[in-house]
Image (tube, rainbow, N blue to C red):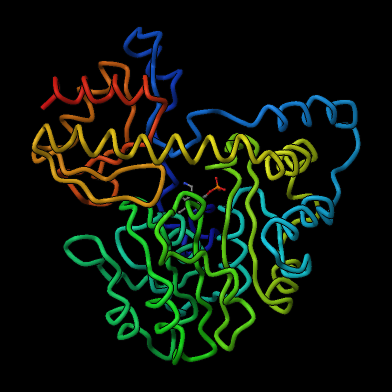
Length: 364
Ligand code: PMP
């Protein structure tokens, strides 16, 4: 087989990404019209109306290439997050930022430390470049063990991923723990702080880490418009880091990586504080509802700072996952992370949460 011998050797053992089931598939497979999707941590309120208006306005210009410098969007992020625009890079989703970081910093033989369980794209980026993923387990209660992370560092370590709040557990790293961790790391190690869910974290001791980027230890903060900003379908994410790191990432990214509708919508979404606050409030209340329901069902769960909750259903999660599918409810099966009695459930609208809770009770 000629192709097999000519593709890069890293690809031989790599798996393609398999996302959660889409709504249409369930509608087709089970003939259910009213499917609810609580599997991808999207915003249950949908996109900001202002973002939809911005898209409608920009449709007239889609024959033009988008702004390769994403100037207006970087300006908007710069003022909302209080960082210089030269410290910001926009990606086609945070996924692209992760890939760019991998392509920029990793070569074959490097090591990447990934606390586990966490977001699968970190492994993907490392594997793609032929780097080795060094997994460091979270504690039994899914807290970060930063001492163990530090111990895993070797001369080959290039990147350390810290996802806070963490997907799929919803646990987070306190400001104090993060600052202590960063104090005496080798300065050639880049710490990637993934804050895809940072806007939902309402604990006083949480930090999104953005104010740490100028310090001695190189840090890049990743954020996304797919979650609280409600634009998952448009694919916009961003990285915040020192000017030097950002300049290297720009060398690797494609010139027109973020389409014009996405850029316009993201600016509008950033400025729509009303929608943003409503989206956060929905999650704060929804988390409480789910906690209460889990307690009534006698299930243990992990307190979450994100828009999802990781619950231990106490029995085979795949069985429960499939029964829920048959009732038109899509959640994430913990088997993705080798946690065979867990499900990750995105906070939905109050009606969706109720439907899920009722169905879960029937599936156990
Ligand atoms: N980081 C984390 C922790 C995520 O959960 C996700 C989305 N599932 C991403 C990054 C990627 O987000 P995006 O949609 O912007 O690519």
